[in-house]
Every structure is written in structure tokens, then in C-alpha cells.
Length: 484
Ligand code: C2O
Ligand code: CU
Image (cartoon, rainbow, N blue to C red; front, side, top):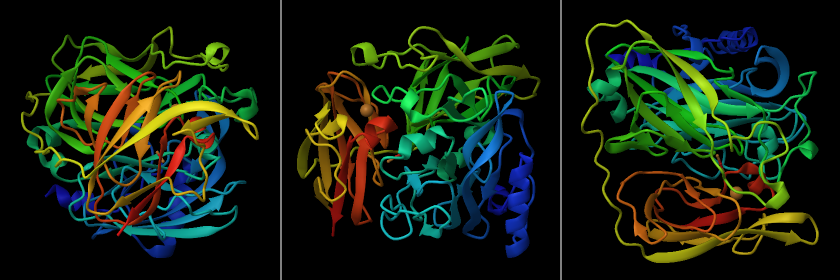
């Protein structure tokens, strides 16, 4: 069965440095490893759980990395950009031996995973100083949905800077969706989208030179750490792309020449059935899974990032750093046909998401920005900038709430809630017909989005925030207490 393969703890160091680190760890702990076949666009490290355990060393450090054909000094997990891909299954235990070799404090957030928010799990209040170690340990609940999740730093004030340095990796939970025959037979590829800004010496450009109000964007736009890598699409078959927007601010409006996307999953896992779309807007923090049919004239097709205007503040708009995707399409990946036999069709049924019960509580949140006499421009939720010591929202475990989020500002804000996925109920009063689990939703300027969240399984303090991470660092975050 496929499960055997999944349970193997597999380590592949595409970069030499990655291999050395992995080898070191494996040597100490006598965990067997086996390389995965590499493919052009996903040649980075992969670790899979074995016998119910995913265990590895993760070291955050600055490291020379090949970026767009040049050496750049990026912030990495295990020397790699993007970071190693982690894969586990529902019910698995995860143990990550983390070392902070950065020059700043940091921590790790497991974006989208439904796991404890306290202790050494998805606790964004941990503060791991330079040189310190911490072992993250948690279990993926046995009923956790399969999906495309990710991990990145989450120390308030430094999140945008550390993510923009490169610290981000996929965390895949394999389960039911992966067993659907057509999905299983599809060729699977991963796309981690990141943008970077480095100077002529390959050093990260200082935040003082970035447009923090707009949210920093870089002019080097990468998929899996490469500029315009190639992928192959099997003729008459299906390509399954699992895409993550790991950029701190950049929006990706994706379109593949002459092909549509059959979206099969959102942030929180499978949709009930595939939906055919020509464009896919992926805002910071979001993931999507799509199937692409290789049923066109064999050849090369470009995956484009189309222009998108996410607003701005007068002269602030547009960002100061190089290419912004307001005006011109940018080629992200080139996809070429490869010869294959036997055709494959799009599956019909994927999951059975049901609508949530009516909420016990309805709350309103207003997103805006303003001047804070102490720090200058601040990004606000309900008129207040983030305060570590204030509890902004207290909810009761095992209840369902509706949150009505209104953006009265001049820029679009991707709203993200930690720990519990939600369903979008309406946009500007218009009921949402698509049933889907999400953890990040776009609240465009001038608009209102209503989401419905069930608070399940875990109590404790966590956060919700704008996923334009400069906005988060500049105050657009609130503390959420889930009470027993
Ligand atoms: Cu991906 Cu609180 O973030
Ligand atoms: Cu924002």
C-alpha cells in the first residue's frame, strides 16, 4: 500500500548543506532515510513521518543560497529556501528539535494546523532567543483533515522580516483526499511562492528601504526558490499542484495559459467537488490545490501572475521596491507537456463538508489604520493596535461564532485566524454558496466578510491578524482566548 511509502522517514537534501545537516541528525538518531526521486521544481528537502512519528532537527540560520542564479544570504530552516517540506498523517506525533541560530529571537507557527496553541505546540508567544533550542512536540488529531499547511516564524514585530528572509516551508497532512483515485493517480507537485529583495552583494535589503505601509514586496519572484522553473504536465493525465503563498505581502493572481484550474482544496482541505476556474487569487498565507488536465495541444504553457491592485495610501501605493504586480503579468513557472499513456479524468466527489450550525455569538471587527503618536502609522483592529497583554476576544470552547469583518481602510487585508478553520458565510451581505474550510480570507477595502468559526478541542490564548505581515507587525493583530 501507499501507506508504507508515506510512513518512511525520507530525507532528501537537494542542497549540499541540507544533506550535511540531515546526515548529522540521522547519524545521531539512527533514523533510516531514503531519497525521494527529485523533480525539477520541487527539489528541496522532504521529511515524512514513519511509524506515527515525524521527528527531525530544524535549525534557523542565515545561509548562502542560490537565488535567481546568484548567491544570496537568506534566512533558512536547515539551509534551504523554501524550508524542508514536512509530511505527516492524522494521528501522528510531531517532534521538531529546533535551534535558533539567527541573530534575532524567533519561534515557529504551524499555519492552519488544528493542534494545541499552548506549551511547545503552536504557541506564538514562545520567545526563542539566539542560540537557544526548543523541542516542539504535538500530535496531529486523528480526525485532522488532509491538506496543505505550512510553518513560519511568528514573533510579533519580526514576522514580516523573517518571512521575507525566506523562513517558510510546507507542512502536508496526507489523508482522505490523497486516496481519491484520480487525485492519487495525478502527478503531484508543490509550489511555494516567495519574493525577495537583495542588494548587489546578495544581502537582504534592510526594512528601512521597504514600503512597510504597503507591505514589503521584492523584485525576485520565485517558485520553490527558483525564478521561472519548469514543470511537466503529463499528456492526457492530471497534474496536481499544491500552491502556497509564502510571501509576506504579495498577492498572486494565477492563471495558466490555455488551461483552467480544477480547484480541489482550499486552506482547510478538500472541497466537496472540484470547481473549474480560470484564475486563482492566492493572498498571503493562503493555499490552494488544483488539478490541471493535460488535454491541450502538447507544448509549453506559462503559469502567470496577473496584475492585481490591492490598494494603497496615496503616494505609498505601489511599493518602493521594483516590480509590483499592478500592471504587468509575471511568469512564475513554465509548464511543458510530457508524453504519457492512459488518460485520467477529473474526480466528481471529493469530500462532504456540511454547513455549520447557527452561531451562539456574533462579533464585529473593523480593520483600519491610523496614526499612533508613539510609533507613527499603526494598523488597527477595532481602533486598537496589538497589545501583548490585552485579551481582545474571549470565546467559549465548543461554541460557534460569526465574525463580521469590515475593512474601512484603503488597502486589502487578508484576515487569518489561528488554530480553528472557518467557513465564509457572506460577502457584503451576499450569501456565499461555496462550502469550504479556510483559515485566511481576503477582506477587500470597503467590504465586509462574515465568517463562521467553531472553536473545538483546544483552549488557550492565540491570535488573529492581517497576513500582510508588515500590517500584523504594525499592530493589526488581536489576542484570542479560548476558554474551557
Ligand atoms: Cu501564517 Cu499568524 O500566521
Ligand atoms: Cu493588512
